[in-house]
Image (tube, rainbow, N blue to C red):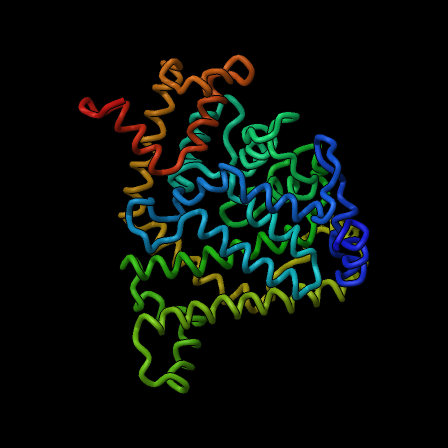
Length: 384
């Protein structure tokens, strides 16, 4: 039977010297005895999966609002795709795959309904009161807002997973500095892998959803060297492949190409810098995990195309603008009429203040719940 001693032996024997070992964790905010046959990070992963905030990701927007259709990614499907990509990379590099998976599963817990437009709206509304950042909100979710244990608030995750939440960074995500979480240190290599796995997932899956929706055309992609190179190779093996399968084959190949490049370049960086411990990784700036210069150059036109043709499409802009108005009007009504909030939410006001409580409540909503709440509060013939 596996126990904590055997987990330690396995990690020392199987993981790279620069991987983060679970027995070296800096601990939890509230002291707990560790589980007899699960590592600290396996336990974190399980707590995240069982949290209400994780379940709500099923009905939170990635790009397309939830009611647009069942084929598009949500925050939950995106999160699972990030976790799968990140875990594969971590295992190949002999990193701690359990820590990597836990950070990946937690990285979007603080997201609002309606994607980044929801975050922008709350940030504007909270500008004079600390603003809004979804990484910081994610930490608040796991430290305070989840209520599952009688002895403490939150789900009491390990220091390294909490660090991974606040230091998560990408084109859409800005790391935040928390004194408790060593702001001068780089994140673990496991968290760095999650950051890039996140970019790989949303670039390629937004591309997939963009094509499925018709907002992106294959003709738009013919300008991209990455797309054209893969297109050219397909007829040699699949002469009669249909359009839909061709799309999936190319996107799968794009993901595989980027994952492979990331693994090789990160391994080369580790070897060049002679990294021998996780603390050497954390003390090094810039980050160790990276694409090659060639891949960065190839990815740039794809990201520019998505920004212009998908995120900048008039239908997406309309959805985003409408979502902002929903959130602004809900926020202002709750601020002016706090008695319109559910009783259990009102009960938090003396402790956290009206604005932060309203912000927490809206940030935790799913797209569907926010739309239903809007109808109840503003449509005269809807039951409240």
